[in-house]
Length: 205
Image (cartoon, rainbow, N blue to C red; front, side, top):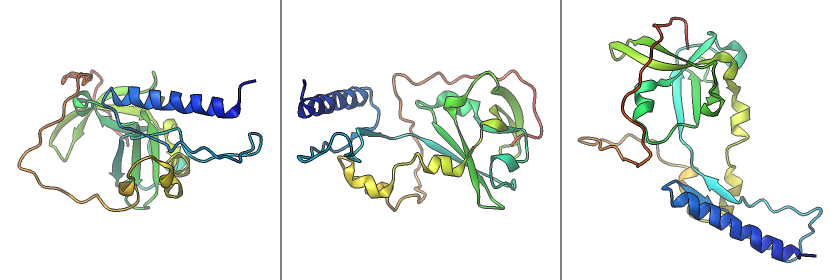
């Protein structure tokens, strides 16, 4: 029978191989610390260290709408994102957070749920003063705040990430002024054109 130590070593090697392969694609992942506990019960013991940690982009959208959860969101559909902006990005946002300005509560959805029920439409953006093609999702795809909080990595376990993690604890978020912005490019970046054939919609979040 293969020993637990042998299996653990092979597991760690597989984890390192996977992390290195994702890093080679120019994506941001970090190792969890490879902790070997000498006195460890395979049946009842558990070590909290993650195999790996990945960085994902979260888009936060504040709304003047009043809601405190998915059920009370006042419209049947939700604006997900500007299709033209999405077409220019080299990576997708995994999560979209919708923050209610009146209540301070928030809900979220994930791009992984995109299916045939998601549509493309055109709406008039009052802030920009022109029409904007948008991706629209059904309200049914909104999730509770708690369900996202439970997926985010806890502060208490950051010391198990193999590398600096201070930015996940505090600081940041201040505006930075630049004369101009030069977008970073990636070989896999999509083209800069995107069409939206649907007509302008009203009463969407």
